[in-house]
Length: 199
Ligand code: DGI
Ligand code: FE
Ligand code: FE
Image 1 (cartoon, protein in one colour):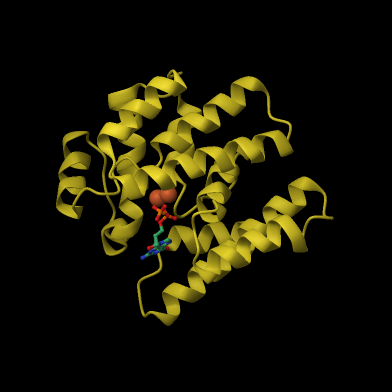
Image 2 (cartoon, rainbow, N blue to C red):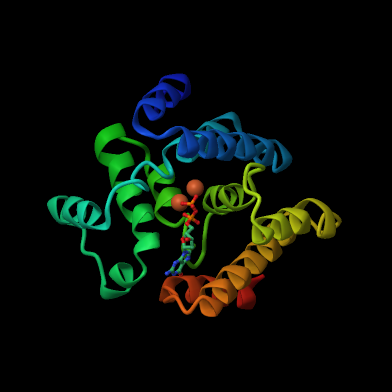
């Protein structure tokens, strides 16, 4: 596990100020959620580490990310390449593993922070949610999901509240991509269907 203070400094050197502000805000949102869900000190630290590392490759060109994947022997599918906005989750997880020797719980959460996956762990879900609702995000979609989690669904049991919020976020993302005529990564659909069936 990385020292969180040192890791924050290292990310500061790699990210532009806009993405660093988002990254810090995801980390802070993760700490709030960790307290709400009663996470152990170790899980809280893992979640904070995932937050600091989650968008580390977001600024790289698609071609650079494809090359990075190739060098590391990671096979990108046609679907991954058709939805380039989702690539940074795959390459970010690889960067966390190779450059920072991050634990599996951290790399796994980073790998699914954009499309989700079936059977997400609590850490996966909390990073996903924090990334969507951190307070610097002002888009209407983010405002709606934040309001749902902290206000509309606040009386639901925690696990149910988390799953219902993730389901709403997938629906909103899918609807937005559809309306903008952009490809929808099949994993996003699978993640949404899994939650619909299992929550
Ligand atoms: O990296 P962030 O901006 O912090 O957030 P993110 O990792 O959730 O990425 C959001 C972007 O990813 C946004 O432009 C929408 C896009 N996205 C999410 N799911 C899909 C997707 N793009 C495609 N094409 N298909 C998806 O399923
Ligand atoms: Fe991201
Ligand atoms: Fe992010």
